[in-house]
Image: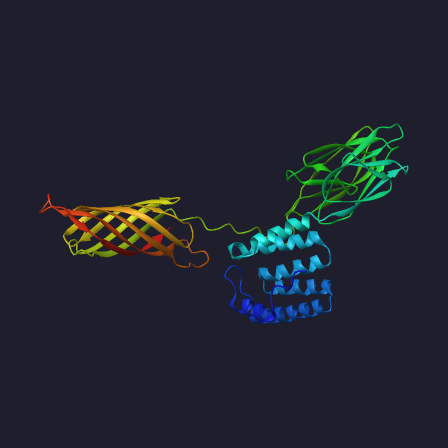
Length: 395
């Protein structure tokens, strides 16, 4: 069984330091959250998982931190309430964002919880009907079958015909699948504002919205659900040999906060270069550059100075990474009193930025090699080895 995610000390540090992704709690809330967390740990030692969940939830409400959601998921798993456990594991990943180093493991755990088998009780009225699951004999109704995933369940009627329902078992949840072999059927039509929402009739999955399906006539309990939306449940009278039509508007659950999309990648920038030609021919090098980029490529132009005078500067760069550290190669040229063509290899490092800050600052350095010539000696070319460093502001 998975162990609790945080110690009290780590939680307190998280409350006091606070990741910038969450609003900072007051000193009073941090104190109350710490007390709730300690009560949760004490409840876990007593194996009182339900109380531990309630106390962790209180701690999270006072001082939100995704690792507390992980602890809640663990305790739901201990209670064998696997759907709730998977929900909190998913919330932990959504709220952790790129900081979830164990993302692959937790996503695998969610899938394992989803795939857990549950007991499906297949009943018939009258009882004793032969039962098949995915075409294989499973005994006479009522019968319990342990299943996981989607399956076709059939029972044989008095006239020898088979009636089929499709069940989908997730998170080890038990299901009851009743068959009435004497009742007449009607048509159920379900529309929803969420396409693909799951529709259950009397506890059995019959399809997804938009739905038109034959169901036993009479009063039926209809449940419509979809991940990330509050479940809707209602009772519908389905007439024999007729149709009942309903429209379900699913709502987001109270307190639902959609994951915050990452800040868009900057498209334009300006940079200040400074460096020198280590061969001594070009002297000091300076430039102010304006550029734009798309994907791994960028192009910039600007105005520069070398030891021989002013010049227009051009640069084209290819980056080999999209992270905070980006190795690159580039080609540059100066066109003026001194003309130079050089190739460079270097690395740029992104400095941290605050929440809501639109621009990002980078520092970079590279070394290159090329040739240069001056207007005074246009036929004489010299080898240059420029070393360049600079600061870039991306928007």
